Each structure stands twice: as C-alpha cells, then as structure tokens.
Length: 341
Image (cartoon, rainbow, N blue to C red; front, side, top):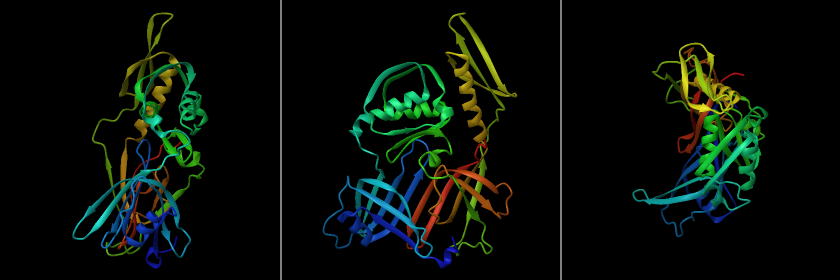
C-alpha cells in the first residue's frame, strides 16, 4: 500500500437491497469492529436523515467493504444483520447498528436455548463437532486441541454459545463463528483456519509523523501491575487409589489452579493452557494508524521504525476497528504479544 495521502478512501455498503442503496447514498460515517474470541463483530453507521421518506428496516443483512480506490485494496469486512436504528435531530441523522450475520442453515434460536447434557470419555474435538453439527456449522479445530481428552464434562442449563465460550476459556482458546464455519482454536489461528492465510501486516513509522498528516500513527504500551507467575500447579484425583496428586510445571512463583482434575493428562492440559495465558499477560498495545483493510483481529502486526523499542516487533491483534468518515479512513487496534510456538 502506497502513501495514504495519495490514495482515495472507499467505503461501500453492499447487499443489493434498497436499504444498502439508501445507506450508501446518505453515508456520513461507518465503523466496523473486528473482534477476537467470543465477542461478535459489529457495525455502526451514521447516515443523513434529512428528507428521508422511509427508514431502513432492522433485521436486514448488509455488507461492508473498505479500502482505497487506486490500489485495488477494497476488502470485504463482513456481513451484518441490522439490529437497532435510532434517529437524532440537529443534525437530523440515523444511527444503525448491527452484529455479524451468522450462518443460518438451522434455526439460530437453538444456539441460544439452554441445554443440559453430559459427556464421558471423549475428546474436545468430538464435543465441538457435536455442538457445531447441531446448528449447521462446519467445525474447524486444530489437531492438538481436537485430541485433548475429556474424561467427564457437564453442560448445566447453559446455552451452547456460553458453553463453547466457557470451554474455550478453559483451554486458553477462542470460539467464533466465521461464515458457515465454527472455529475453535488457539489465539492467532482463527484467520488460518477460516481460509485466510496469516500474514504480518507491517505498520511503518512515518518520516514526518505529525497529527495533521493523514499518515499519522500513534501508539501506547502498558503492562499489568501485578505479580508475574513463572509456573503453574494443578491437582488431580486418582479414583482407583482414592488419592490426590500434584503436578508442577515451570519455576516459582507458581499459580495454583482451583479445580481438581479427573486425571493426570487433564491436569497437564490445564497447566499448558494456563502457561500460554501467563505468557501473554505482559505488554499490551493500543495503536491508531491510517486505514488498512488487511488489519484484522487474530492477525499479526509488525511495528517498523518506531522510536520506542518496547513497541517494536510483532503483536497479535485482539480487536481492530475500521472507521470511515469525512476525515478519511483510519484504524485502531488493541494487541498483545503473540505466544511464539
């Protein structure tokens, strides 16, 4: 991508409906949030309502594309179901908000209905597949996670959405619908499992970095003010011997997991997940930069030429917001250091 100051920003509202056409003609601003994990992607649009004879309808699905005209970078940012429409006066505008439109091969309300069931002597991959199949999703689980043994697991009056997110959190993973796919994976793997190759998007530090420039980049780095753990301790119960055992990994100080696990392997899997989580709990980055449609949650950023060595290097994006308005196209992102394999 060339210098942004030489490019024409583009925001296209798609869908082929009168709603999409009305939004495009009256567009004032548009923000698309690409989120990681259990958070749904979302869109917020503001349009001119002066003289508008008929409101757009909620419940309709629209698409959004952003990029630049000259370098053919205009990229699909997703499909969204309009959920809320509100009007303001002086100036007279409509604000439309929506969330990512899920695949609907089966009744989507089933995904939010409470269920109770149990699993015995199975694997994480089989559990995810069973739930995904029930709702018409095609599951995508990496081999290492799919093979994790599950001796016993209960779902007690939980929606399948909440159950899967709880299961993902337990294994330091993320669970997210992407089109017709249900992705259950380690952080940073969503894009690759959904068919989009993971690449590092480089963010260069401009030579003349001033707030009045459209190429302006700003960032901040912070770290959690809390004691760091260097290891993890977990306990598991041997039912045959009626005896508890302890497993230690890493150096002191160690974090003790509250749950008593039903087998040694389950304890070790939980320790591995917690160690990955601890490794991420270091610096966090907030970034604002010129719009780049290649920036996406779960993707990798590379900060190049930044004067702060603490900011330089690779980051894993947790949340990216694409914003188009009268000032142009900008992106903001929050990120943490990736856990290198």
